[in-house]
Image (tube, rainbow, N blue to C red; front, side, top):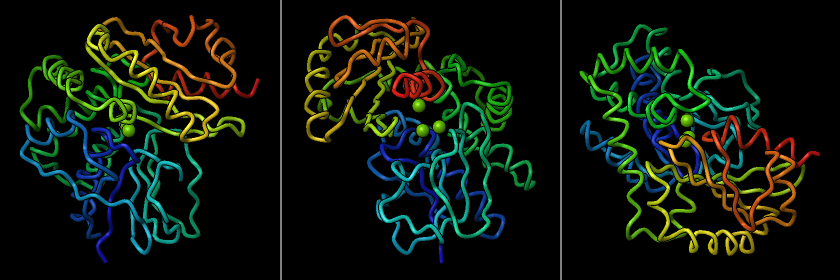
Length: 307
Ligand code: MG
Ligand code: MG
Ligand code: MG
């Protein structure tokens, strides 16, 4: 049976590229595998795949009866519907270990680094498999995306080393320029429905028993979002009601100013000050130096919600 390699819901560039890379590696070390995604890929991922001449993975949302490798997540809430736990063959990730459990021993590679593709680069080396040029290219882009061109608090020395080695294989010489090009694609929001923007990079969390949603839009200049900001604020209010959330937060991250404006709707807005030491002005707050949902926003909110 062919196994699927799949990333989290609302696929980002790392989830897409890690699924392609791990499927390539696994297939070369004796496990027939193919990449999959849990939904339409975003414009940044489309740009990256087009640049290196690769097709988007097929869409898979139901895990019933499927053998799977999970990449870029290990949370049930972010995984396939009807995930068959005894058919999980492995996990490759760089987030905190989630709540997926398995009845059998499996391969688990989770490293505290900035990007799943950094781990996969090291797996290729471990298994002594050569990385194809186009896959090295998308893996480089994946690292640039997840580490916000090496600026995020999540970025580690391993990410820099992996990106440098992958760029050499792919024949890329100006990673800074490539990164900015990618983030410009990501910043182009014209004509995109508001709900699609809110959900583009969106994750559900359970925080002290409360349902919390946190979305993020990363742009090269926050003013690009001026025209849609009020619509975004209205839409997270609607989303909160539809999904019976305690809170929905939307981070509008300015990657040049290196901070985020957070839009919020919450049954208890004081949780923001408890978490970040700064009170919101109405339904928004500027968080200086906060760019990483994983390393800054989620841990702070977990403490704030528990307080
Ligand atoms: Mg991801
Ligand atoms: Mg990632
Ligand atoms: Mg990300």
